[in-house]
Image 1 (cartoon, one colour):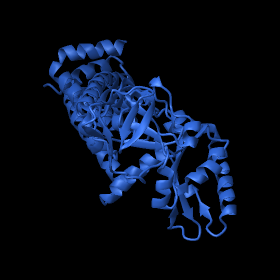
Image 2: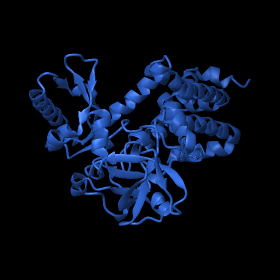
Image 3: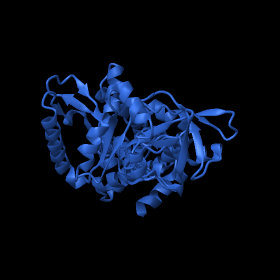
Length: 426
């Protein structure tokens, strides 16, 4: 509390110095936190993707005879092998980047004359156990709906309003009629794994036959939710499933581990692929960024601290002459600057939040290599801004800035002899 009062007194006495120190810290923190917030939104357990930290994705097989060859997981494999696994709390299958991956489906609006493009996520009932959507009306399609090939859909509130749709009503997508079984709160497109306008069973009437003809099979991507303490058990069970598959397909044995990713692994892979495409490794992007965003502002602030220390050397010399210890004076100076740094950090965090909200339609693409094909402005919710990790990163950045900016000039000034310090203003 004493140091806080001293810092307030310093701010009143040296208004220009304090304002410049806080502004310099705020800008540095704002840039760092803007990037941190972007990646926090991509990796944190945020609704409806509340199981990101325990989610794994299996994209297919690698062929053991030729490791460079890849194979797709079929719907039959999901049904007969993977869906029966005991370790995951949830297993679901989704058709990704297979059926018109970069196109939208056409949906008739309420007037029956105009269409709009919609993104359709083709999945199965387990999807709604893995992702926690908030249903405002109705419920997900059931396993019986899936097995029977019924054309059932879950739609967002936005789609329901545009089509005047409600549970039990019918909407037309690509000239096929679907019955709405549930309406959910529109998710943010930043939830890339689950966001869509419409969700329907990929086993809906006619689709399995059409895709089987087109692709000779129905390929899917598998999503697993695995408790953190059962990861090793999950990997062992996955090997057992692989062995059962290979026993049935002795002519073409496969492996699964090479195409299995945790959610964090997949985000890292996206980043690595992006920087390699630019001809630079991830490491050579992160290091210069940290140096630019932290070291350069710290050097500027360090110069300000050094100039202030020069002005206050006679005062420090008097205190040393009356018995004040060097570590006591150093601790006071560091704490005074830490208070200013924390104030600047709070201001910088607020600036980052405002910038993230105002420029949300492009900032995620710039900093996060967004691969979403949606053209909608992202929906940002409070839980995307507030989280323990966000504040921990902000506090760490502030402490690093304070140590870099205040410690060295203060330590050098305190090493000067008392007599030399007393003669500074003569």
